Structures are given as C-alpha cells and as structure tokens.
Image (cartoon, rainbow, N blue to C red; front, top):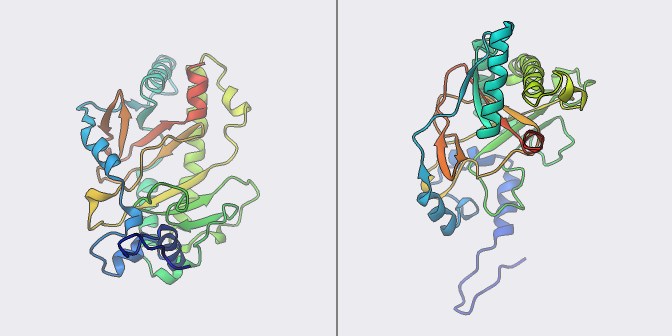
Length: 289
C-alpha cells in the first residue's frame, strides 16, 4: 500500500510498513546493529513528551532493600527474614536477595548461555523467531511490537517451563539448553521458598500461595540489549509493572535497571550473585488487601 502524502507533497511516515519490514527480517535489533546502521529507525524513537518527562524525574540516591536469606533454617532469623520481606514488599514492591541457595556458577552460566544465543549466526536464531505465544521457545523483538507506542531496543528469548509434561529439553536452543534447564530447576525451588515467605508475611500458612496455584510453572524471559547508536532516543524497556505474582530477575553486572519509587527513579545496583524480586500486580493486591 502506498504511503499517504501531506499537503506539501512530502511522504508521511508509514509506521505499520516499517514495523512489518523490521519484523520480517527475523533478525531483531541485533540484526540492525550488524547491518552497520548509524541512526535508529523511527519505530524505536520515543515521543518528545516521554523524553521530557523522564528527564524531569528526580533521581533518588537510595538503595533497594537487600535481604540475606542465609539463616532461613533458624527460627529467629526466619522470623526476621519474613518481616524484611513484608516491609520490602509493602513499601517498595522490590528487593534483592543474597545467599538464596542458587550457586554462582549456575547464574553466570545462564547469563553466558543467553549471550551466546543472541550473538550466534542470525540464521540459527531465525529458526526460533515467532509471534506464536503457544510455542515453548519464542525468539522475537518486542512482544507488543504492533501495539506499543514505540518499540524498545531489545531482543527477547522466552523459554516455557509451564507444562510439567514438557520434559524434552531438545526443544531448547543448544547454546543455552543445559544452563537454562539447570537454572530453571533452581529458580523453581527458590520460587517455592519465596511463596512460603510471602504467605507468612501476609499472616497466612506457608503453603497458602502454593495452594492457590501460584507455583504452577514458570517462564524464563531473557532480554538482550545490543549497543545503541542513539541511546538518548530510546529505551531497552519502557516503564511498566509485572502483571503476575512475582518475578525473579537475574541481572548482569551492567547498571541500567531502574524502579519508580515515591515519584523518583532509583537505580537497582547489580550485586554479583544476587537476584532481584519484583512483586507483581496480583500479589500487590493480596499484600494491600
């Protein structure tokens, strides 16, 4: 379909055509960088009012709570950890956990596997490129590419562990298969521990949230943020909240994650070996009920 013309005869921007053209490459944002581009496509440029709003936000020099889970099996420390989880969940909706039981090498190998997947030959990645959300393995750029106000500068690989019958790991990409399976096992265990702590923080029995079905499967959603030639014009992830119960987030050691707290932006400083816990919308309702 031909692009429309304005009164001066200049061709108007055809956003849908550009979105489709980008999606059809199946190469993601990494493909744009590999092509040698120097200016980001307009679909990634954030609106001027959004840029201005971000620049006007205050930056808070405070730190997200860090909770040490090392003494969880001791009665007194267990009570203290539950209380810290309650306060952090109510006040921040975010906290970091250390001494959580997942070996450091498992975390590092997970990050390395995802990096290798994204930086391999594009033809291999294209085998997994899809917008079919029923697939166990989904690789694409921006799940909401055709509905969001502007695209984010990232590529995403999602691996589903939601179906207990999905035991065949051969479906997973070879470069991150072993690390993803191992990480998933540990994260599931930690997720159950956190559900028990959150249940207790709500004044309920430890198994309450699990009995509600909160532990039924999970997805690993991994993001890759290639170098951007015009970083002042776009974001890797736009402002949002997570809709579920909670997210366990593994950061690399590059500072970039921010949360919105008391009308201020707060940097979530990377701690090697720590995991970030983000209380989702559904659990926030329970906490504040």
